[in-house]
Length: 195
View 1 (cartoon, rainbow, N blue to C red):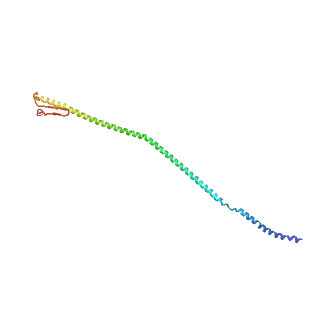
View 2: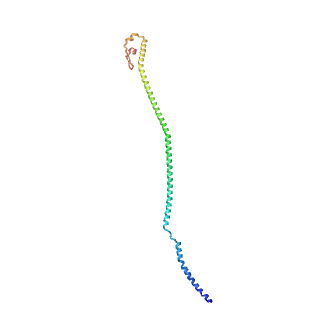
View 3: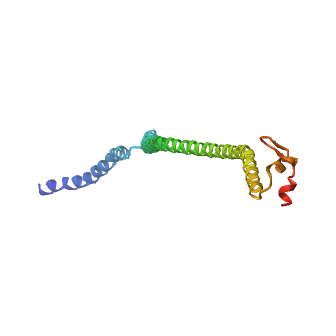
């Protein structure tokens, strides 16, 4: 009886390695299937989309920077234009301020010119008056000539009277006297010059 109970033990021991081999054989395809699931192939079409999105983001960022730069440039240009307008306004104001000065100066120059003209006219008038005075003096001198000659003749006759010569002898000597406003012709009186 004891030997019968001990016999099935080796069969069990023999059956165990076969089961192990079968078990080892059976899970292999499962492991391969699991490995295939664990290593999925990356989808290729997703990579270019990501690249495109990145590129788009970069481009949009660059565009934003460019827009900001353009806005800054426009602001600077506007500021420069405003400064130029202010300068032009200041220049216009200065010109407007200078215009009354220039007009005042022009008015002064015109007044000076008028004064100079008046002075010249006065000088001309003075010269004309001087010429008139000279002409009047000449006329007076010419008009005074006969009177002077008459006075000289009267003095001569007085001297002749003083020399106690007889009166009739004075008349016997030939004397002719012609008096004009501009010329006087007097014949010589020999009895006066001879003494």
